[in-house]
Image (cartoon, rainbow, N blue to C red; front, top):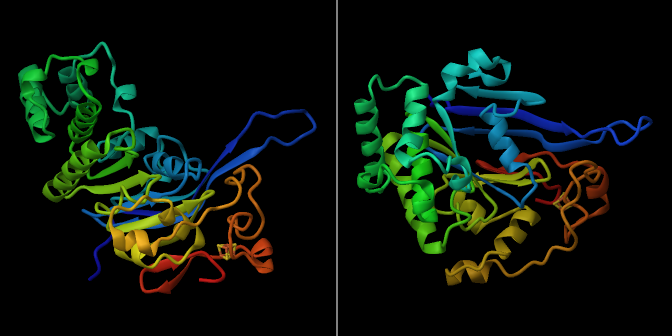
Length: 325
Ligand code: SF4
């Protein structure tokens, strides 16, 4: 029997209504996420990739119910989280965590890192005594590669990579099943990026964690993702097994994203010759008709301006939203 996915997202929509600019005009609506669907099995990683403003971070936060969906379903451990109120959501909060791009912003500069990591343990009453919390924190610090001797130091005393390790320890404190990694290595040097990615992979293997890995760079998610979904203006335009996306991208936007990566692997560098996209990403307030990518697509046809392409399975497990794929 096929295993149930740990997380199932169906037709997820998140719109933001902007303040009315005049009494006579309807308020503008930002269509940040406009009908996104995917599954993630336990212990697997889905890489969610796209340019800034495409809706990937909003997708992650809406799944975690940090912002409520406008429509759609998020099934996690058998419940549709979108139907739960804040009290009903509480038992699910521990199971779902987020790691941010800049852990410094989410750490209180006046709190020692020991207290910062212990905070979720105390809030959720996972430790009865301070000694127990201290042991647990030291164990978590060791697990993420931080010296427990530094338990009484403050966030500013650590490097960017170490601060990201603190963020990871804090997220792990409540034993989550699912973690949204929101650009977790984007602000780090390449050598430190590799260390953090290796740590995340080791933790996944050891604890059977399930990840949604959000990134703007297809290179970053290459080794850690089992599947990759590419987003453009609130929609998934291509989704496939990681290897397939890199070897045989079918959507012109994915091809352009791959061509923008400075590959060190000569095979990939030869394969993805530079494609320069014309123009800017259109506005999510008034997205283009038909295919949302058509104003920038180098192979757009008349049909693309009027007909919106559906995400369809063109090869086993390879989904593309393009009339010409
Ligand atoms: Fe380009 Fe048309 Fe395909 Fe959209 S549907 S990606 S405009 S070819």
